[in-house]
Structure formats: structure tokens, C-alpha cells
Image 1 (cartoon, rainbow, N blue to C red):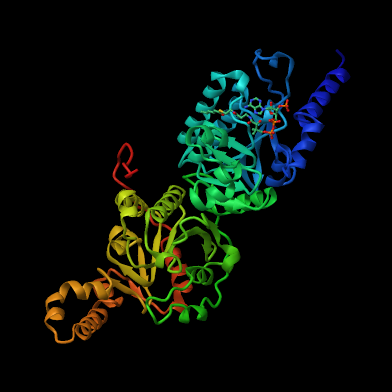
Image 2: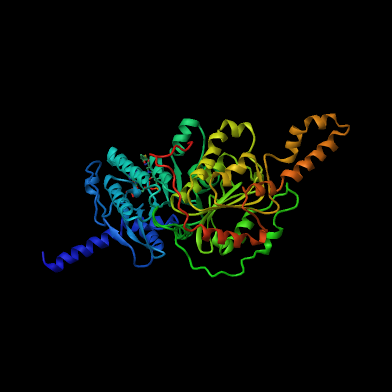
Length: 517
Ligand code: HXC
């Protein structure tokens, strides 16, 4: 073969690989409103930065006619490049090749870039669009999945891992995304479930569509499996890039520090945000938007439609990445329940693993009462959030805007469990319980003996309120570092995080902790 012929072979094979399963299947993919594996990578990566690895890999299966059907790349495009100028490893499953199904070699390609990402300390992004295990390969495919699950677990807490689900993701295949740090789903074109509608129908006699069972809506509102529900693929990839912008490359790295020009950081809108009536709700988002850089635009909310009584998300204050955790008094009065505790606990642990400081806003009347919560384990699940905060060694700043009652006061990043700076607004109420309940218990006798029970109850309630439903007891004890005017919150928080930038603290050596799962 001449040199020209050899080069022509390379060109022919490259062109073949770029076509995946062929033009008609690419057209079919587009008709479904989906992009191809390569189009997704083009959107994700900085232009011209993507370097492909394993473009010519082929499967090794000889059964069920596969010895006559080969596609270069074997259903997954893998490689590395830059996103916002920083190194990222990516795999993008190609639905046009055997439905993006996972063969032994397909899995090997994914594992190869995962190993590189771990060795070189950079995030792994998985763009998932797959019919699951390559059925013709049997256990070889299952082994391939397990190789990926194992690496997902080993890489957990070392490099950020993000999964975007852009098509089917079913059966055991769901467990790779589940182990990664964040799952994003595209509305109407993606779904995730362990068993599909047909199996559900056979076993439980329920009639359910794929979308209702495991679409983006179900997983962003009901199960909490997905952290982001995106209207389309472009939005999904843009959000993924934004998410990466808040994160460090690995657990030994610091999140990017953006330039910050100090200005007038007073935020007058905060002065009148908390209503005088302690039972009246307000939207904690407003507080967050006033405090973080770039307002609403600068806040990337995670799990937006799940456990809405807790708000979590990424933002920057004074150019520094922070993880925001906030009670939402506008939903369930901001009570802590099972879902909100687990949601916030996982977020806190992610931030702590990746050196992202925590900014916590507190307005919490307590834990949600009821048999449903108790029997489903609010004890164990609430403990997850407590545990996550206790363990976190990143800089931690708390702002109590209103209620901080009972155990929830302790849990929500109190001084006692390791927070560094604790602020309270003058409207803060820091006490064991609400005044009504407290008066009923400690003044039961006086109320019973009074001629006018109701008037006595009210009087005792007021007494309790005046004494305890304030920030002052806590401030006198030093549990609150400063009582601040709401309008100064942004300035205080920026200054505090700057002061804490070199915080160094560590936990006692151990094999690993034992989070109450
Ligand atoms: C091999 C597959 C495949 C698979 C799809 N294809 N899934 N090939 N193994 N798992 C092929 C099809 O034969 C077809 O080939 C092409 O991909 C596109 O598939 P269609 O069915 O035409 O597409 P669509 O109508 O969009 O339906 C997509 C689908 C469906 C819903 C994903 O293909 C499907 O139900 N596939 C099987 C899913 C499944 O049961 N997987 C195994 C699950 S168990 P042609 O040549 O026509 O283009 C599992 C265990 C994992 O995954 C365990 C991990 C521990």
C-alpha cells in the first residue's frame, strides 16, 4: 500500500466513524428532537478543543449476527477537551449505533477516560443516550457496567462527575448516573427507570407511560433523582457548563475565583423582606438574590422543584463560589422533613468534598411532625443533614433571618456544629420551641388556674416571646457572632468568606465515616 493509500484509509475510516450508525439513523435521531453524540460534544466543549480517544474501537461480539455488523467507535464518543477553558473528560453515547447500547468495548472506552480523569484530576461528564446492555453480549456487557460503577465510586469525591440523560437510561444502567454528583435530564426525550412500563404492568398492574414513570418531570418533582430538569438539550448543556464554572477541577483544587471590585454592598431591599407577622411567609429566594453576585442570574438552583421547603444551589459572593443552603418559609413554613434533609445533606457533602464554602440562610420552625414522617424515618434522614454539616470542614457562614427553633436550630449550621461565622437579623427568633407551645407546657398550671385561661395563655406567650423569641440570648452567649442589619448582609458575608479563605481544619484519621444512611 502506498503512503497516499494509507492516508486515504485513515480518511475513509475517520469519515466512517464520524457517521456513527449512518445518515438515516442520524436523521431519525434528529426527528425525535435529539442531537447526535457528536453534536452534543460540540455544544459542550470549547470550539476546536475536543480530542477524541478510541475513534476506531470495534466490538468483539460474534453472536447473533454481530460478526457482520460493525461501527467504528462502537456507540460511544469519548475524549477530552476544555469547557470554559478548563480540562474536562467526556463520553457521549451514540444512539445511532445499536441504540447506544453498552458493549464490553463501549464500556472499556468509558473506563479509559474515567481512569485518565482520575489520574489527571479533572471532571467527568457523561452524556447518556442508551438502550442499556448490548443484548447480544450478555454478561460481557454487565461486566462492563460494573467496571463503570466501580470507577464512579472510586472517583466520587475526587473529581466532579456529572451525568446528562438525553435519551433512554434504564435497568441497572441508571446506577452509574446515580453514583455521580449531579444528574440532568431533558424533558420529554429522556427517561430513567429500573424497570420499564411493561414490567411495571406485569408486576403491579399499573398502567404508566415511560414519561410518567421516569421522565424529567417525575424525577425532578417526585423522586428527586434528577437535580436539573431542562426544557431541551441545548439548555441542558448550557446549564452543565454553568454548573462546571462553580466547581474546582478536583478535591485538591480550589473553585475558580472571579475578579471582584468592591462597591456599595448595601442591599436596602432586605430591610423590609421579613414580615412583622412571624406566621406570614416570604420567599427566601429574594434574600439569596440580594446577597449573591449577579442576583438571580448568578444563582444556579439545584433540585429546584423537589423538596421546595429547602433551597440549595451554587452562587458567588465577592467572586468566590459558595454552596447556598436555605430554608424556604414559603413552603411548609420552611420545616425540615425527610426529603429536604436528604436533599440538603447530599449538597452539603458535595460542597465539602470539593472545597466549596457554605452559606446558610435559616428560617426554620422545626421538623415536620406526623406519622408519615416518623414512620418513614425523619430521625435517620434528619440526622443526615446534621451529620453532613458536622463533618464539613469548608468555611461556613450562617445568617438567621427569622426562626431557628429546637433541634432545627442546631442542625442548620449552628455555631455548635462547626459553623465559622453566625449572623442573625434583629427579627431572629432563636428558642427551643414556639411561644404558644412553650407557654402551654411551662405555664400549664398558671393557665389552668387563671380565671381567663385564654388571656393568661396570651400573657405567658408574650412573656416567652419577649424573653426568647429574639437573637439576644444567643448573641449574649456568643452562639451568634453578630446581630446585623439585613441590608448589610451581603457586605458581612463577603467579608466573612474573605476572612475564612485560608481556613484549615481536618477530621480525625479514620477509614471512613458512617453516615446514617
Ligand atoms: C442491542 C439495541 C438495544 C440493546 C436498542 N438496540 N437497544 N441493540 N442492545 N439493548 C438497537 C435496536 O435493535 C435498533 O437497531 C436500534 O438500537 C434503535 O432501537 P429502536 O428500538 O429502533 O429505537 P426506539 O424505538 O427509539 O426504542 C429505543 C428503546 C428500545 C426503548 C431503547 O430499543 C428498547 O427497548 N431497547 C431494549 C432495551 C433493553 O431492554 N435493554 C436491556 C435492558 S437491561 P437498528 O439496527 O434497528 O437501528 C440492562 C441491564 C443493565 O440494560 C444492567 C447493568 C447492571
